[in-house]
Image 1: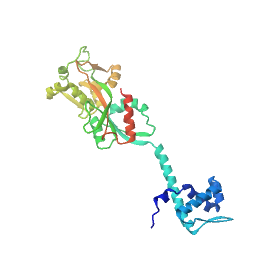
Image 2: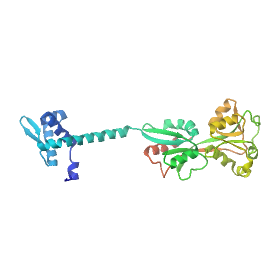
Image 3: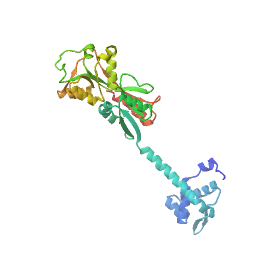
Image 4: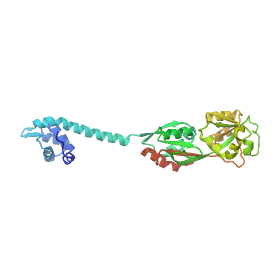
Length: 306
């Protein structure tokens, strides 16, 4: 089979193919021209150019009209296929312009409940669909490393190893007690040593909140070692219930404690010379997020730092 040259293929006009098929349908170049809303001289010129490009005669012309030659009959289905392919190309391009790109985002529950609702309205997500997966800070990092999520939001004092990141928010973590705790009526700050002498309610390893609490307590916590009574719970919701029940001192983001304090069931415990800040980071694989939608989202986030 002889392959056509690139130059001959590039010069073929789709409207000439459509005129050729219309001439077969109506039996006349002039009728095809009217249907295509072009003048007859222009239609004739287009068809003659197409014949020169293909090197064959496609139509037999007479006073009463036009009809396809034997070659024209054989080539007409191919002409129709070319036009259908071009129409499919244009339709697909239109769909791609208007469809919403889906990206999977992994986040902690704290971020999805208290940060994303504030950020999302300003992120211009008209063409982006977010599939949100909630997990722990460690789970977020694991999902992004495994490419199960394009980007993620972690909480903790340190950057996840092997991932690109930037801080996009921060929140204070308060030490809190419930009404049943012996310190409920206390009116002066608690030092680190005294804090470590009472049960501490913490989420399991992998929680960003636990990580920042351990980092804030630092060497004193390491020095106390097994003498510290840690009550490990599965998540922040269970930690809150445990604190309300008087199990021990818990650590919750301020966005939660302010609501619970207003209800009178929990109070913040003032700590002596200790401030616990919980940075929120957006994280991704590689030097930058892998998709245009993810890069767009990340680029917009600094405008919405708490």
